[in-house]
Image (cartoon, rainbow, N blue to C red; front, side, top):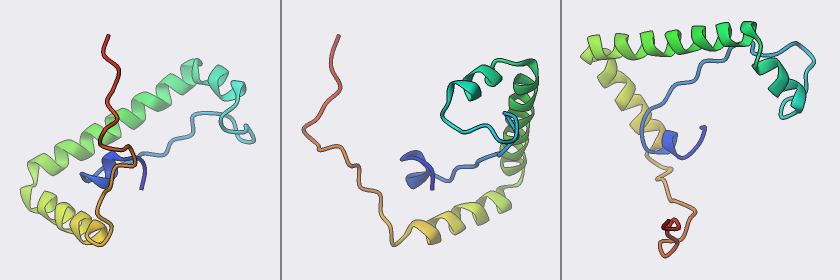
Length: 93
């Protein structure tokens, strides 16, 4: 699972090649490559893929119901518990 959101609602990921083979993740080289036209094209493709998936699910309520059931089955025994204590609040400006 990726992040807190996926613990609360079904989510999707789209893996696309956004940097050159052999580049170590979390480096300045990845950041530099992310500014290239090729990386922007890849991210646009990923966004279109995720949007088309969402549209497909909206257009097919039966398929969406299956996704929700599968997600509920996979997360049922792992209820989400926020690691931030209840008394912690974001700072006010």
